[in-house]
Each structure stands twice: as C-alpha cells, then as structure tokens.
Length: 327
Image 1 (cartoon, rainbow, N blue to C red):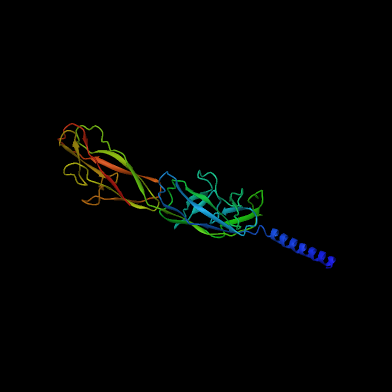
Image 2: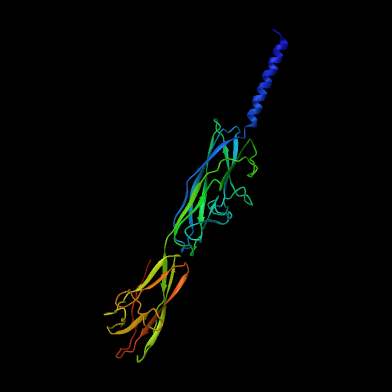
C-alpha cells in the first residue's frame, strides 16, 4: 500500500474531525429555553385596610440543546404602560391606578426588574444539563401590594405583560457564570396578566351627643354629634338612624328614658343646623343621608335638640341609636 496516500488520508480524516468538533463547540451556546408562568391574581382587595396583600407563584424555565454543562438564564420583567420597577401599577376604568410590585424574595426587598433597567434587576437562574442536554428550574415570584390605597375606586384592575414587557437572556458556560446583561444572547419572551378586584367597603364611627345638665326646659336645648364615614372611592352609600329604644319613639320624636325609671324626654336628631329635617330611616317623615365615597373620611354632623317640655323628673336620661350604613 502506498504509505504517502495513507498519510494523506489520515491527515484529511483528522482535518475533517477537527472541523466537526470546532463546529460543535462554536454552537455550544445556542440554547433553546422556554418560560412558563400563570397569570398573577391578587383577588379581592379592600383598599381601605392597612394590611398588605401578598401573592406568590412559580416561573418555570425549561432548556434543551444544552451543549455546555451549565447555562445562566436571566429573566426580566418590565413595567407595562411605562413606569419603573419601583412604580408598577394596574389600570381600571378610571385614571386612578392600583399600585403593586413584583419581587425576587419573600421579604419584598429585591424588586424583580430587567436587564434594561438601571441598575439591572433581572432574576438569574442557573441550570445544569442532564445527559440529554436538558434542564429545568423553577423560581418563585412574590407579588406585593401596599395598603391602604384609599382613593382607588372599586372595580377590576389589570396589568398586561406582553412580549415587549418580558425578556430572557441565556448563555451556556463551563465554569464561571456570566453576569446578566443585555450583551447576553436573547431568548424568548412570554406573556402574563396581573389582576385585582377592588371591592367596595365602608367604615363608620360615631360620637355621643351630650345635652349636658339641664334645669327647667323652658327653651330648646341643642347639642351635636358626628358620624365619620370612609367609603371606597365611587361607592354610593346611605346613612340611616333608627328610632332608638324609648317607648313610643318616632323619627321626629325620639325618647330618652330616665335611669331607674320610666319617665322620658322627647328629643330630635336632624341633618340640618336649623333642626327642620329629621334624620331617620326614610319613613315617618324622616330623611336618609346619601353620599358617595372618595376614599377619605367624611364628617357628618348630627344635630340634636331637646324641645321645651315640662314635668321632667330629675335624673340621667339616655337613649341608644343604631347607625346603619348601606352601600
């Protein structure tokens, strides 16, 4: 056999083998990865409370065609509608947004941002390939909503993350993981929606009405109380007062009863300072106070008056009125 020909064939085979190996190594970082995550649901939210709302979930990363032992995946969340990582909001039917944020940790101290933000705040994930060049990893997201946000109206709110608001950068490596940056190869994007429903709620408090010490009731005696109302913005409500506990009381002639006795004093509660419009439940000539919440505390004065009357026995007279808010 011609040894020169054999040597040339061997050299050609080695050259082909080297060419094939170099081609494999050059494409080692072309990794195919996908991201799967569900929509983020904050559920029903009462924006008048002071208790924050938290919701957690998973982001699943699956990679194939890994030709290196490890891969660094950097997951980025943007901020739909503009804004920044520190100012994420959902929008509803009005111009008032509902604020929330997404975090990388359960203590809500590290926002989940993007490699395109300053500073970069994407979530890095390290995957290790199995014998088939595949790897899977699951990371947690932590949604968080600070409350109160009292001026946010009731209704449905969403933030829609399109493929323009998410981003994955992925790069294979052997020993030292690359830092997340925009220079890393671009992967796929994905979509999800953040949702919340702001529910209507109202809180009320009331102060007592004290007519003080009275001698002969030869003229009207007046005293005022207050009902504080805080309702979710846009929530219509009505305030009613019952007739009290006095025997024979009506909306226009309530009765205070003497402690330890059965004697009564007639008095009235009114929505106006001139004591002309009785405040009740809408029956018996009395009116109901109506309003619409704005998320702030609104003060409603209750105007009380004891009309002139004779024959009242000395003692402490009292009555209990139930205030009802309907919304």
